[in-house]
Amino acid sequence: MITARNISDFFLAKAIETESFISNLKLQKLVYYAQAWHLGIKEKEIFEDDFQAWVHGPVLPSLYHDYKHFRWTPIILDQKPEITIPGELNNFLEDICTEYFACEAYDLERMTHAERPWQQARQGLKPDEPSSNIIEKGWMKEFYGSRAQEA
Image (cartoon, rainbow, N blue to C red; front, side, top):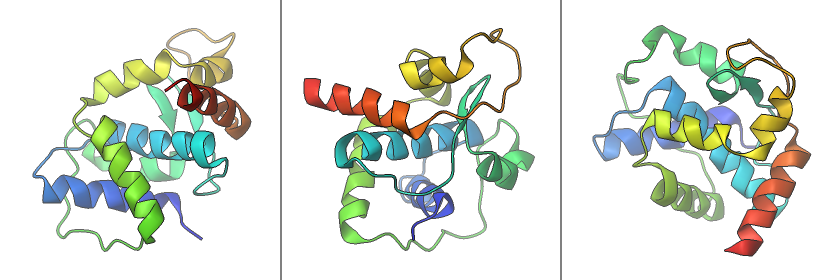
């Protein structure tokens, strides 16, 4: 089974390869979009973890805690993570990179804020109110699936 950590390692390795900076905020959004589009296009999850609708967008708490000591600065690793992603999923993640990797973290945050799954999970909350509400995978599957059909 692929884990969220495997997916984050893919993006961190890509940042090292391309000499790009990636913060915890940006990493969260890239992993979110990988899961969301996989649900929408392939109709199945990549990993089991659930995203929560935090103030700054979708977050996997376990992944956040792994890198929170970097705060808002780029994640700098001692060595490139070893990637254990099967070929078809690797190609899918490359497509996610093509679409989102060049985006700034705050642009990705704004994009998720404008999309229905995060909004549904935040319904009734003030903009700066903390939340651990789950962004339901069914919402992601429906929203991104309909967007994929429009393309």
